[in-house]
Length: 364
View 1 (cartoon, rainbow, N blue to C red):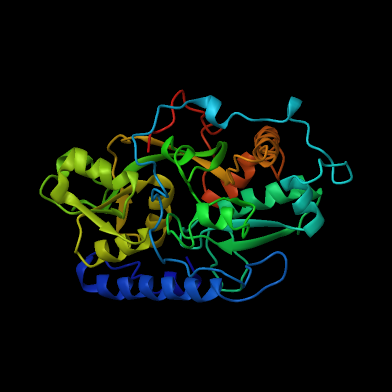
View 2: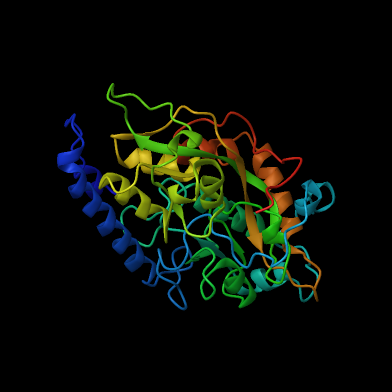
């Protein structure tokens, strides 16, 4: 993530074991630094100070916040399809319906976006300056630009996925954030039940894959999840990934932890054999450690990421249609501020195509 962290990596050392504890300590120090950064104050375009949870608390990436007590019902594109007519966005000077979320945001003067700071390439603060960066951060900035017609009208708050006090649902319900952009998988469970939330169409399509040490030949391994029975496979607590591990490698193989970065430290210390989660998260881990890589086995399942907004049964939802239309325009923009260029800049590779709207969202 940061320059200091990269310098701790023994780039020219062919053997892994002697240096793994050093790299694990670097990871732990980085998590602590990120948590401290999230508690600092800043201006409008930065990280807000009041009521901000420390990054890494609670349940980590890909958790299931407030899943319904009954099995979720299948859902498809209609669950996230709300758009403005013709995807025409109201301009900053246009009259907004009184009492709506959009009018409240514009009256305040800035959008409040919930983010993560633990996911390299997507949401992180490499220089600890309260200036987060990454693909999720740029998507949130693009939403603010769509609201105000110019840059700079955005404030960030760290949101801890699935935590009952600081998770997305609670932060949205309390009005602490307007929307959340933090590698959150769109699932039917998250759009149903007592703690339901609204989701935009996907802005990124992840794939669940494995991260493992390089093979003896120095190349990525070809191991699949089904081949890890009797091994330890790390993923975040209460996540879709944990359930998939149990189903394909056995219950004993699942090694749950509070946060995805914990898995990287455990892999470096030889306490687990592999990490299983979305490739978006694994890509960031692999970029930090030259001794690990995604396996070449086919992905297990696709995970569509969406922008989360508040569900209120008493009010019409005016923000998700705006977000969907802004996202559609962003994806269609072939210029330097468009979705494809942001993807290439932040994720260090060109996209193979726009994010997919699946026929059926994961049940969750």
